[in-house]
Image: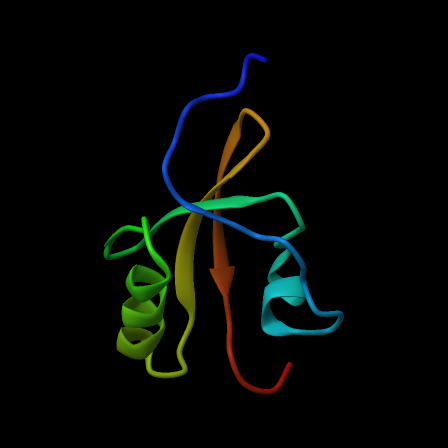
Length: 77
C-alpha cells in the first residue's frame, strides 16, 4: 500500500480538547518514538510520560507515509 513498515502504538481515538488533541495528534497516527527512544509498547510510552513529569513530551509519529515530530504539552492550555 506504499506505507512504511514501522513498529509503534496506533492512536485509536483522541479526546477533544485533550493535550493530545491540542498538539495535533489524530486517530490513525502511529507513535514510533519519543525524544528519549523508540515506542514499541504501552510501557515505553508510560515510561516517557513519567520521565516528562508533566512537561512537554516530544513524540515522533507516522501519519500515513509522513513522519512528524509533535510536542505534547501537559497542564493548562
